[in-house]
Length: 334
Image (tube, rainbow, N blue to C red):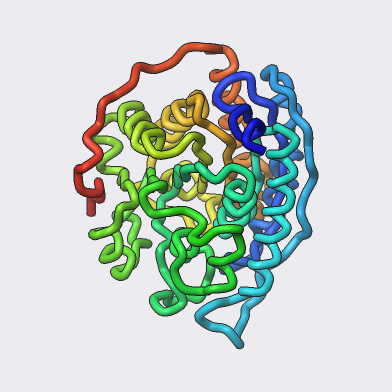
């Protein structure tokens, strides 16, 4: 097992495994369960192969659709969310043991819990780069909606619903300091007061949209990587499309104003993917019902494959190491 962990691929020369998670169980409406089909129909797998990568499609997990859960207003569809996470964890473990880097097509944000359960069960020294407009730190006690996709990070760090937080072989799934929130968008209006209060004293690394633009996109992305790499061996990227500004990405399940532009997201993602610590990524919160003509799915597919093509073509180029003071307070910008 130790030999496997030390030799798993990252950065360039990766072998990719595509895993679809057609689930909106943790969402607030239908549509995200159709995203994996939409991405496949826009030839994501073929385009990655054309970019020069070895790609195998592991298919989809069982499909789950959102249904209003009036019996559990503070924890809607908990059983379905837990089942999706278990199914995902098993599939991601298999992918990693087969020595592939996962590219996961979601699905609502709660799939991140399942992804990380599978990862830490095989590769415990992992960091999470949460490329998302939200903090997802609500709990059943603080939520106003009861929707689990707003509670993802809370459960990853071990807060509240015991059954969901204890699905991995260890608890918590990740420590706070091994998580970086990148693209945090307080100006969108979707960051709740309890989340803001939590972040003020949390050791979660925080890069808001303001911080990213003040530092420069590439510089901020490299800093986020270096902070995590000082603590972990490999980094998994959660990519929520609501980090993209609503005008550019109206097919996000909940479009966010004041987000990053497509160009800014592309520049940051290229930095993450080219890192020798990159383990894999997931794409979440794309609502295919808002993209009937597949225009935005096609744009996202082109965006993702061009990012990986860039990395393949740059081969062994590495950015210089940046020295960062790790004793600074969290980089939250209201």
